[in-house]
Image (cartoon, rainbow, N blue to C red; front, side, top):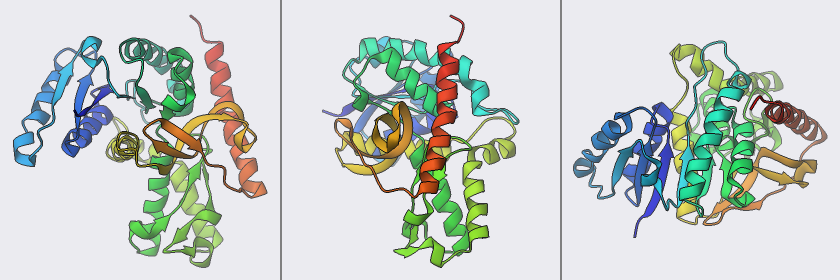
Amino acid sequence: MRKKVTVVGAGNVGATTAQRLFERGYMDVVLTDVVEDMPQGKALDLLESGPVLGVDASIIGTNDYDATADSDLVIITAGIARKPGMSRDDLLFTNMKIMGSVVKEVAERSPNATLIIVSNPLDAMVQHAYSVSKFPKNRVVGMAGVLDTARFRTFLAQELNVSVKDVQAYVLGGHGDQMVPLTHYTTIGGVPIANLLDEATLERIIKRTQGGGGEIVALLKTGSAFYAPSAAVAEMVDAILLDQKRQLPCAALLEGEYGINGLFMGIPVVLGASGVEKIVEIELTSQEREQLEKSADGVRELIDAMAKAPA
């Protein structure tokens, strides 16, 4: 029997995620959105691509959460997108309300599901989803580090004119301007990045990575990134549903690891059938620890703001 995956939100991120998952062929997909008939139309269009692609899986669109019942995995992309000049923090209260409402619906119908949160501001939304769902910590995870690391790897590969396949890196911390690329773990075919790029060039690439989402928002004018985010989600889905035990940077609940307690942050984790099966602690330099704590402070500000949000 194929696994059942629900994607909440049929906008660019959600619909593209649904496409990537449907085309894998080993899971049945439910695409849901509050906009009447829109998820049904997109799902039908995707379903009709099945004969061309040789995919026998099912995909349906719905405005009714009942169709999502008994999902193995729920991906939440719902929320308003950033506009030019808007920070992720500006999204906080609107998306907090949307997230709370969605999580109540899906948790009631799929109490054994794993939640992958994609909505921004990411770290705060994962924290809110965890609080509302009351799911165990291993079954609530945020997609951020995979995307941020992919951007970092892309820019490094472009700079050095090498294959992205040979670029290994980690980007930790909050999903925002204070994310922390770990340069001393960054290698090109096993060669440390410090041997290949001067400090000024590396710093320029780090800055571009930290502002990667904003760069795309500015170029698109209306909307935000969705191709790379959906690819990052799909990698996480494969890791969980296929029990791949992948070590990936994701937003997970820290309970003392890295000196941070009670906060969802981007760190290396092992993703498998149980969700977040392990938090991997790697050695950081004093500067990286300082940067990670600064990033944590930014996330704490959002959590504190949510706690004071009007009912």
